[in-house]
Image 1 (cartoon, rainbow, N blue to C red):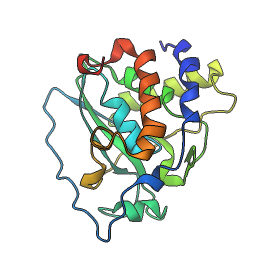
Image 2 (tube, one colour; image 1 turned 120 degrees about the vertical axis):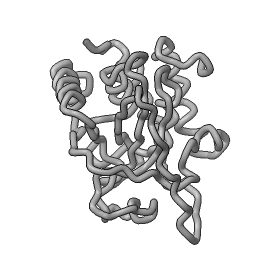
Image 3 (cartoon, rainbow, N blue to C red; image 1 turned 45 degrees about the vertical axis):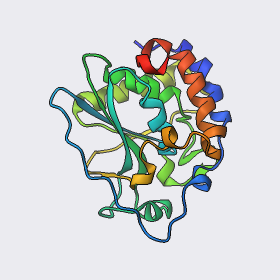
Image 4 (cartoon, helix red, strand yellow; image 1 turned 90 degrees about the vertical axis):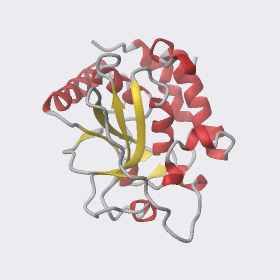
Length: 221
């Protein structure tokens, strides 16, 4: 069901990690958040958190069949949180991406495969130097079918022993998604020379493109 051989090729991605928050813009005020966009009827939605959403967004933007990726916050208890509030670790939110995709071109199982192969799902509330519950590895299913698929891949990966430690990715109930501030959206494409992007995201994308060459959009080749 899953291509485990690809995992060994991607385990090195986590070596290129520094603190995501260190490179994020400083602002005296809270920038306005993007207004939610409508999703075409033929598309489905996936919501994942795997550390800094700049990285996760940049990866899934490359995938054929993905229509749009929005960075944001989910899983917390504060309404309409700001980035600063989420970074405090007090709101309960995770940095996530919401992926709108065409299931006729890319399946949810394939998105899960990419998700697990492009971050470390065995580190609790941490990805590299990014530490806190806002960086937890988390899946927010939008249906029971998605929840079942997530449970199955976690069980299969644990059985296969891909990592020396067990997977700590949580499967949490989806309630509401808050788009992040405008300056977080499409961040890598707009700021490829920024320090964090050059040191962390670019090497990660280059390796991802090689391993998942058969899953890339034509423009990403």
